[in-house]
Length: 126
Image (cartoon, rainbow, N blue to C red; front, side):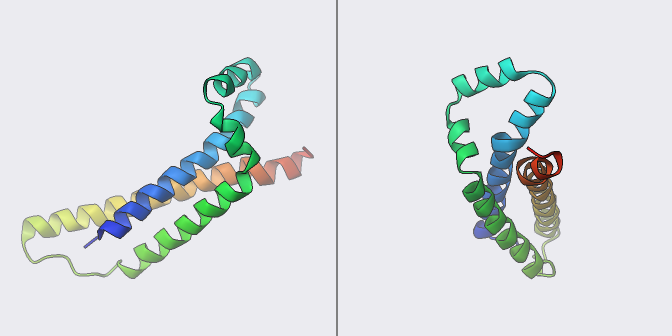
């Protein structure tokens, strides 16, 4: 069964993965769509976005560590037994499936942010 550590790690990896999108993908998307004024308004309303962008290497590094730890925990518990009680077993399997979904959504968010922050600027010469 999924432990409290696994749940916490899954939520933290989702949060840090989403922050990679906010720091890098969202601003690039807004500028690409010609919505620089919207970006300026967003940065005015949430000035912490500047800090995230300035420290994107640390943000991506922390997110990668949490994703690696989360993936490792998912792998370690993939065949862990669920309770014998049918209701508890169903809940256990549902939590396990939801944990995998959260993990892969987090991984997708991370890879999207990584592409916008590091890959696309190199390809496009920015």
